[in-house]
Every structure is written in structure tokens, then in C-alpha cells.
Image (cartoon, rainbow, N blue to C red):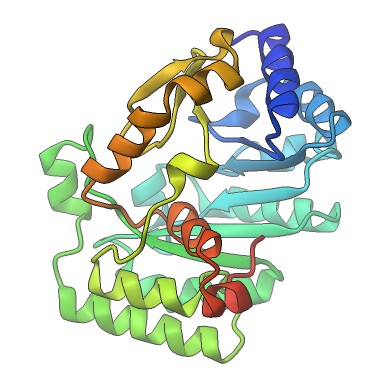
Length: 274
């Protein structure tokens, strides 16, 4: 989407009543116009959020003055380069630069078979950096090749469960883990046990302007050019059907916010990134 198209989308989103704009794609810091987009969203009164791999963060953090929430993906320490294909130190320098610029930062980590031995170390890294950290298990979704899944999938379940048990202990000991204990217990079993409200609270817009209700199911609801109000009204039954037919996922944003939607007390008390 061009910059003017995104501006029109943000105008429409604000008029529709959306309150949060999350810039999240292959890598949003690759867009030269990102500061203009964030500034425009902020000027409309939207809360702004960004998820990045952090590689370009150090050189562009001075352009992110209109950003409210900054998330950086870090999936390991010793295994980071093997997973992400780049140097962790470069990302850490970006996090430190963003921290010095006054940003509140969340490190987000996907637990896989590659990094399960480094999860507690990542919590301690977040403590040292003065950031929050979140966890979710790797999701076996369409598009992941079988050989990649064989390499990254969680195979040693006893070790994985012991790791999540330790995360729950650290959470209860006030470590900077944003996940609720309810969610952590859910991912320990790797079984979704919640009523999904993604279709009630989230609209996902792809790079070409397609509107989806869920990044897991990837079912088109319409296009930005159709208008959010029109798409929302026309997709009511489709959104309900998507949720009813879904086997469930453990994406922490969907789970935690669905639990908040249902006003689960422990989540309301202990999910930190609101």
C-alpha cells in the first residue's frame, strides 16, 4: 500500500472506532515512510505499536518519536544467529538505543525446539536490559515446510513443560514476563482452552490492503477500499464461522486479549502489556 492509501486507511479506521494501530509485517522498519505513518496515526489519536526484528532499530530509533509500544523479536541467545540469520549484538544495540530514547520495550520470543534450553536466560537478559518479555509456542501453520517444522518443532515435551513451569515460577516471582499465569499454564499443555474473540476485536490488514479477521486463518473479509464499516457489517457471519470452525491457536495476543474480553480476573491482574 502507498503512503496516501495508508493515511486513508487510518482515517477510516479512526472513524470506525479502532483505537490501536500496530505496524507489523515482514519488517516495518524497511519502509522509509514509517515515521510519517506513525505520526499520522498518532495525530488521529490512535495508540501506535510496532513489531520489528530489531536489525535496523539502532539507525532508525530517532525517527520513532510517535511510537507508544515497541516490540522486538528475540528468539534466543546462543542459537539466535542460527534461527534469525543475523547477529544478536546488533539487535541488542538497537534495544539499548531505543531504551535510551525513552521507549518502553517488549522482547517477544517464540519457543521452539531450537531455543527451549535458553528461555530462562532470555528472561534474565530482559531483566538486565530493563525490558518486558513475552513468550508463545511455535505454531505449526500453513506455509511452514515440513523439514523446517521437523527442525524447529517442540519434540521433547517433558523438557518443554519443565521450561514453562519455570516461566510460571519466574512470573510469580515478579520477573518482567508480560504473559498471564493463565496463558502460561495453557501453553504448557499446548491445548487452547479459551473462547476466541479475535473476530470481535482485531482486523488484520495485509500489505496489499486485504482485510482479514485473523492472521492464523488468513480468510479474506474484504478490502480496505471497501471501508471498515462495510467490511465489518458484511462479514459478521463469516467472522463467527471462522471462529467456530477453528481448532484454536496459542498466539499470545489473541489468547490474552480474548481472556481480557471475557474479564478473566487473573489475566486482568497479571497480563502486563495493555
